[in-house]
Structures are given as structure tokens and as C-alpha cells.
Length: 605
Image 1 (cartoon, helix red, strand yellow):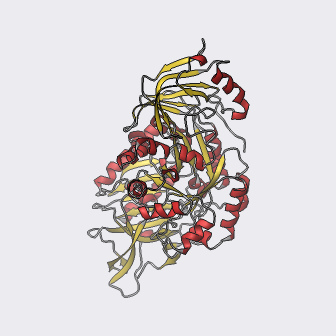
Image 2 (cartoon, rainbow, N blue to C red):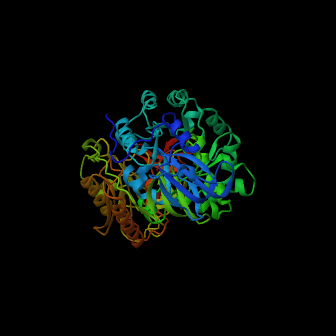
Image 3 (cartoon, rainbow, N blue to C red):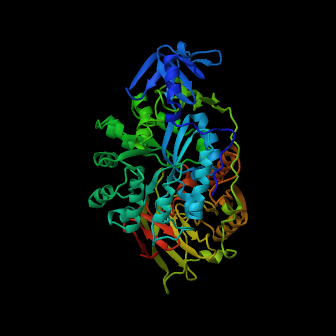
């Protein structure tokens, strides 16, 4: 597949190509393209803030960082007075999924650049579960066209749990080995099949080995609470980081075993405050901790921020500002073996930096990448041309039939007036769920929901092969008080369709509506459509501007509250109900899955 790179942005030259020029500018023999004077240098290598610093930039890289860059100023040099403000390295998101923003790589970049993000490490395993290797290549090539550094991790587990779900595509060890030869693949994406790694599953072993042989980083995902022998086996199997920790014990265990603990603050995952105590209270070395977002939807990006939001949050938890910035810059760069290119304001590195007026509040006045100002005062100053996704990436929702209310009937055992069922329990602001049980009434042979008890119905509708298959179950925690249903073709990780509702007629309307528009998320109540976010690209991403998508997502949030849901970022919780690699209980196209045992279980207890 040919690569497409926007003519508006040129790829930075390797350091080896421009090193003599950098030396000439540093010594005054040649002049810089840009000089920023009178800054307070946030040096993430030494941990210092150095007043009265000038930086000189040429060919998109730092050439000189010191007390006086007047020797590098010529007639054609642009000079910027920092006025005593802080010079901060561009922020890095160490682990994230662009698709969770409901937008493309281009629109995600447009949204986060004003917030100071200049490097992202993306794992496109969402599109991989729908379109396979071709989908990964599409996002890989789009990433190359960006004016910031968007590195791609090759998805490791598609499907995430073989035998427990069936995705729209599969990736083999041979696919992983091929991807390791691509220009912009930085490593292996989160290895979610942690039982497979601990059991020496040949597919897992081969994929990890191909990555290590290529000299690239192996991403981790250990979602179990068991820190015994399975955890030790997983670490021995090769993963080098993990973002699934939720408590201080998780962070400590990972760092002690030589992993990098990635602390995430996404739209719905609040795992920084609990784990940061490993540094603030236990005194562990901050060099082994990295900040990331994992999943941020468009509303968060547009209104609340991206990595700047995470760094501020870390500072609020008691970290020194410089330490928090290190965890979002140099620590990330070193982990991915990119310290020579990104992560600090030092000679030879790409000139990705921020001008910040308040360090603790991380008030970003200007954002530069590769020596070019991209944003100031929170506004993007450049245009990034839209990336044209082919028709093969669209029209991916195949239901096989028009769904009806009867498709959501749950037949009770013969003669039963009441049944005990397994219920997926939503945990606010965390990815894990609870394995609950509930006693439900039976009417006319079918199991009833219990709206008063906050037990409504969940269904997984097969959407890749048009089988017409529907798996039904029950979920608690959303708090819906009205007749309603929400359907989404974003259903991590296999991305079938998840429908949750208190009314079967609305559930059918919602599912059929997404079939009409080619995917997305929609909310119906009492037969009326209250909100819709269309996502025609693989049923995962919109082809509209981030601001438009954020507006539609905000309308969805309001509509969900109107029908009784008060959870923070409830849509994100909804989208993970089929994620069969995070405990405790999930739903897949294979049935109800107990993720603590990694096995299918019966709906009835």
C-alpha cells in the first residue's frame, strides 16, 4: 500500500544528515532558523530550571541551549523573546488509542496540539479488529503525514482473547514480523492475552520475539489482580510496560520487576492518584514511571485537554512540576529508545517545545514542533489536510437482518418464576467490572429486567459477518430510569455492536439505526432518537472535524443524563463491556465471559 504524506509537512531529516549544520550553528559559524531568548529552561535530564536560557534551532532541531545564543542570530533568523517564561519539552502520550477519540489521526492531532502534545505512541488495535493489517497500515500512513511525531505500535492481540471472541480480522505472527519493517512502527502494542504469555502460547511467543529481534519495545497489559506466579511469568515473557495498574501495589510490583509503570488518566480511567503514592509516599524512583491517557474521547480533548491535563493532575497529587514533566517527556522517550530525537530540550533533538507562563498550572502560551509554531493561546495556527480513507474502510456494519424486540428476549428455564443471573457490574472511572448476581422475575417464559434495581439488559450484536447473531445478558451500574437504549459499534476490542437498554423496542431501533449510518453510537428513548454520533470509518471513527464530533458527543452525554445515567463518561464505560481481557465479567459474541478464569460461563447461576 503506498504511503501518503501531506505536502504541507516535511519529515524531519535524521540527525546524521544535519549534525554538521547543528555544530556550525552551535559554534556560530552558521545562523539559526529560530532563536528563543530569555527563557527558563526546564531541563528534564538534570531536573533543574535554569534561568536566562536561549535556544537556537536549525533544520527542525535544537543546535544550542545555553546562556546566550546571539552568535546564532543572523538576518534571516526569527527571534522570539520568551520574557522569562518556561521552556518545556513537548509532551508525549506513551500509550493511547486514537479511535477512542471518535476521530481520525489527523483530527486527533488537531485537537491535542494546542494542549502541548507533540509526540504520541498509538496502538491502532481497534481498527485492526475490524480491518486487519490493512487498517493498521492506513493509520500508520496517516500518522506519517502529521506535523508532530505519531509513532505506531503494531497491535499484538487480534482478537484479544482467541476462543472467547471472534473479531472482524486476525493478525498473525507473520503480520507482526512484516509490520516491524515499516518505517513508523515503534514496537508491539499492549499484549493483552496475559494468560497466553504466562502459558507460553506459541502465537504470543512468536509476536514478542519478532519485536525483540527488531530491537523495538514490547507493550504490556496485565489486567489481573493476581501478582503471583502468573504475573511473574508474564514479565518473564517480555512485556516492558503496563498501564493497567489501579492501585499503589500494582505500580510497585511492576517497577520492581523492571517494567515501566504507565499511569493513565483518560476520559474514564482515573488511575494516577492511587498509584502515584509509590513515588510521593514510598519514594520509588520516578524514572520508572510514565504518564499516558489510554482512551480519551473527543469531548475531553476539545474541552479539557490531553497530556497537559494529565501532567496537571499529577502535580495536584503532590509531584514536583519538573518530575511530572519528566514522566511525560524524557521517561517516555527513553522507554521507546527515542531519547536522541524527542523528550528534552537539548542539542540534536527535534525542536518540540512549549512556552509556558505558569509551570504548576502548565499554562501553555505556544506550541512548537520541529521548530515551527503550531499553536498559541490554545488555538491551532496551521491547517492539517484531511486524510482520505478509502471506501474499503467504510460500510463495515453488517447485521444480516433487521433486528426486532424479540431478538433481545432471554428465555428462562422451563417452569421458572424467578431466576438468578450473572450481571456485569460497571465500576465508575475504572476499566474493570464486577461479577454480580441478581434475582430476576420471569414473565411468559422470559426473564424481566429490574429497572428499580438498576439491572437492565445488554446485548452483543454480531456486525462483521452479517450472521444475525445476538448474545443477551444483564448489566448494572448505569442508573437508567427511563425507557431507553444506547447502541455502539465501538465495542472494545472485537468491535461488534453493544446495545444496553431498559426497553427492547428501543434496543432494536438503536441497533438498526447504526446499521443504516455505518456505525457509531446512538441513543433512543421511547421510540425517539435523542443523540447520534456517526462513525463511518470502520464503525469506529468519524470523518468530521473534532469540534463537530465533540459537539455531538456532548449531546450524547446530555441525553444519557436525561434518561438517568449520572456516571462520569458513561459512554466510555459502555464501550468496554465486551473487553474480555479485563476482569471480572464481560460479554462477547461467544457468550458471557468470566475474565478471572478466562472461560465462558452460563448466564444463569
